[in-house]
Image (cartoon, rainbow, N blue to C red; front, side):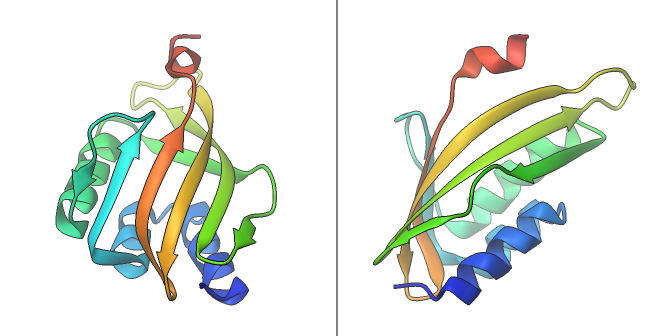
Length: 122
């Protein structure tokens, strides 16, 4: 079960914009992520590479925490809003998502993101 301090430190790192560093620092080596029940991506190194590639497409990602994380034993649920600011300027596209995580001690072992992909087309 993660400590509240660990979850809050993870959230703070994501809010700071250090998304790849958060994966490096807070995910187990064999962690996996999946989006909307899609095929999981397995392994911290792959997760970091995937995140870095996604971030390279935009100027920056502004991240907001929309509700305090819910912690129930080894499960953590976080509601986020991400605004993707394009390199060419102009309005960014925002999306809200819920991250459903399983922690092993103070590290994230699994994470599933739930969101409406239509948000990005608005």
